[in-house]
Amino acid sequence: MDKLCHIANTIFGRYQRPFCPRWDEMLNKIMSECEVTDLSEHTITFSTKRGQVCVWCANKWYSFGHLYRVNDKWVGAENERRPRFSTMQRLHRIHSSLWQEKLKTDYSRIMEKISD
Image (cartoon, rainbow, N blue to C red; front, side, top):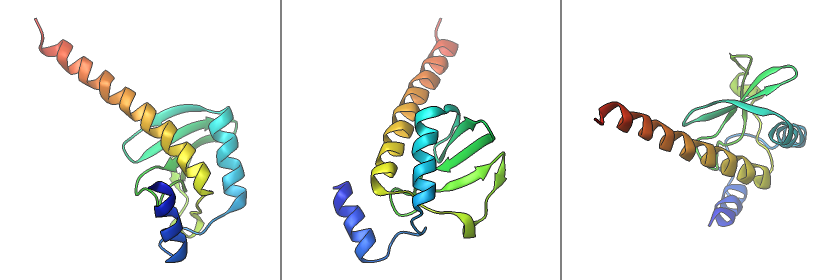
């Protein structure tokens, strides 16, 4: 289903951000080499040698995987680019897995607070 969505987004111009091979390469490197330092429903933040890199992980797939903030400063819509679809899928798997872990942990903490 995801591939059909990608094909439709490509054919009908539904991607909100233009593709950038340089960003694709950088994001793959970041995902492979850098630690996740923050996670929200909409973003994932990695710690790099040059600081914090926050990537948008919402609006699957049409506005997904673009650079959102660098060191807590918004990069601006004109500088937001998307990676390859395969990179978006990889990012989605990482974000989804970590987000599910976080939700389970948060739930466990809530249950501990209210249990006897």
